[in-house]
Amino acid sequence: MIKSKNKQLNLNVKDCSSNIFLKLCYFSSVVLLLSCGSDTSKKTKTSETTSIKTESKKAEKVVTKKVLFFGDSLTAGYGLDDINDAFPALIQIKIDSLSLKYTVINSGLSGETSAGGKSRIDWVLNQKVDIFILELGANDGLRGIPLKETRKNLQAIIDAVLAKNTATKIVLAGMQLPPNMGIDYITEFKTIFPELAKKNGLKLIPFLLKDVGGVPELNQADGIHPTKEGHQILAKNTWAVLESLLDS
Image (cartoon, rainbow, N blue to C red; front, side, top):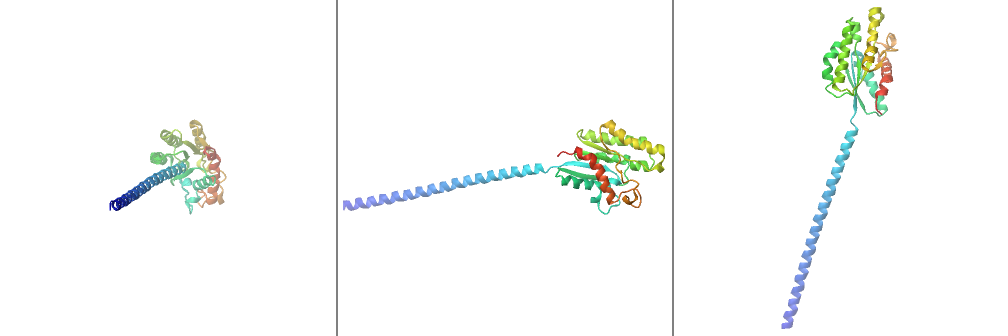
């Protein structure tokens, strides 16, 4: 009877030990799973953080510099069926073909004079501009505005651009007038642009309408505004000067 009780006791002890062992195994498994889950979570968070940083770097790379065309109807593409045929848009196409990180902004306004440009320049400069192309003055000449005023207004625009950001590169587009404006007037008008460029250390497009002005087939019916083909030549004249200012 005693042996039987001892045997039964031994069996109970074994069962108990077995149960404890199973519980320990189960507990260990749970701890292990939780640990793995935590590690996986950490890896996921690390992966997400790395992904965010990568996307952030990509976003930084696509940030482009700005080339702003500030002018009159020539810049605005007056009379064209599509503004994308105007020479500023053609410059953007050229820039894109070379994979350069620049965005062209067309701030042309038909009928704009140098005085009008002076009055709106502060608003235009609310954005950061890296290269500023100034194409104004032709309407002053066609209206017979005193050239002293034209020169003064153009200088004020240049000063405003540099006051906003001294690092902005400025290109001045030179213009000429038809002979019916009088020899003295057109001669003085022509000298305004190279003189301002020299005084301020600016890049100069000697004559924006070179090979276009006075050529009937390259101008619209008014004889003043270039056709689509004419704008392609304006883009060529502009690119000859602008190209050297663009960072590769």
